[in-house]
Image 1 (cartoon, rainbow, N blue to C red):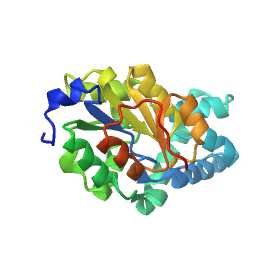
Image 2 (cartoon, helix red, strand yellow):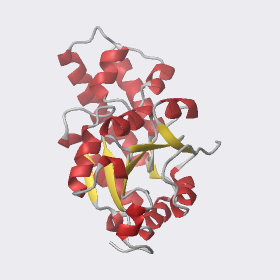
Image 3 (cartoon, helix red, strand yellow):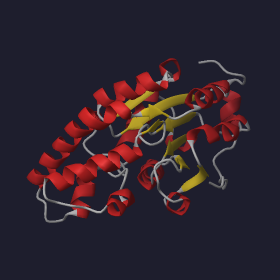
Amino acid sequence: MGGAFPFRNHLECGLSAAYIFDVEGTLVDCAPQTLQCWHETLASFGVPVPMVSLQRLSGMDGDEMLATLVPSLDESARKKILTAEGERYRAVHLPRVRAFPGVRAVFTAIKALGARIALATDCQSDELKRYRGLMNVDDMIDAVACGDEVSKGKPDPALIELALGHLGGISAASATMIGDTPFDAQAARRAGATAWGTLTGGHPRSSLIDAGCSVVVPAVEDLQRYIERGTPGVSASAPR
């Protein structure tokens, strides 16, 4: 782990020692595909749900989302839908996903500060393998926490806590979590980390701010200037 500044000085400045990134909708452009997949899957089970309702809960743990949208579904029915949605997504939608521009530049800026990088994503390991191939930043990733390692996804803080554990010796208070949904921000805040947000998941800036984001930018590439100037994650936002 190298960088322009010693790691000790980086911490003394009150900046983040680690940046933890959500992947889907934050680093790779897949929010529209995910929403479409949910819409198609639910319709195939005779449970039509408006896209606007799916968008509102986009990024929430899948089982929790289904329980919220369709309370009449029991656990067995939700599990069948979750399995079908995952199979449909991998077969139909995953091949069309692309990485957002600027990911490597942002990761390079973080490394220049001497900070560490982790991924904390609800997706399954086979999906993450595809995403990592698209992003071309494996040489800069220090830790990964994946959806198949925890029993609940965001807004539960388990993924963030697991990522911090994999990083080793970094407290939540000195970490910043970047995601594209209010549920990423809620998970970060529940874990005790700073939350930053991007608008690439389709959620309004007000929702991200209300969920606890102290920085909100249009896309991940717009984070570079905050990182390079050492923004410690307080009261900053960028217009869309």
